[in-house]
Structures are given as C-alpha cells and as structure tokens.
Image (cartoon, rainbow, N blue to C red; front, side, top):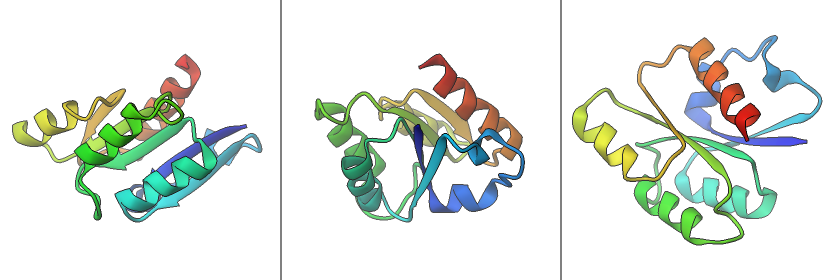
Length: 121
C-alpha cells in the first residue's frame, strides 16, 4: 500500500481520472496546512508528501526540518511546488526535498514526477 499526502490546493488541481492515484494500492490524504501535513504524516507514515512552499500554518522550512530531524518520519519522499522565482526556488531547495516543481505545474507532469519518485523508492 502506497500512501501519498498532497496539499489540498495541489490535489484540487490534479484531475486524477485514470492516473495511478486511483489504483487500489494507493491511498491519498490531503492537508490544508503544514501543521496538518505533519499531523497526518505522524499518524499515517506516508511514503510521499507533495506540498507547496506557501502552505498556511508553520513555514515549509520548519515543516521539512521537523520531518528530516525525526528518525521515525525522515524516510519520506518530499516534492515541493513553489513560485517561479529565484528566491522561492532557493528557499525550497533549503527544505531538503527530493524534488521541486515550479508553478504553474501541468497536472500530467506532477503525476509523472510523483510516480517516478515512488517507483525510484
């Protein structure tokens, strides 16, 4: 069973349809804030978190730091979506994520990158 946690706004933008997210062995959780992301990951131990640099709640850098410093949570893959600016990209890279995409993100590209990360793991 693969568990994926996706920021609510990003999840709404994905037309899941026939994608691998609809397979029986994939469970998708959504979170509206970084605080909720951390809470769900602590409870569910997801394999992949897809988040946005500008999520409400605690800062994304803090979220990633808390996850990466916790031995029980740190093995998760993380994909960050951020605005198309040098400052945002640099900030995202400091978050120690496994992948980075800039907005606007094509849903097909996001799904392909998600599947690629999970298959590589």
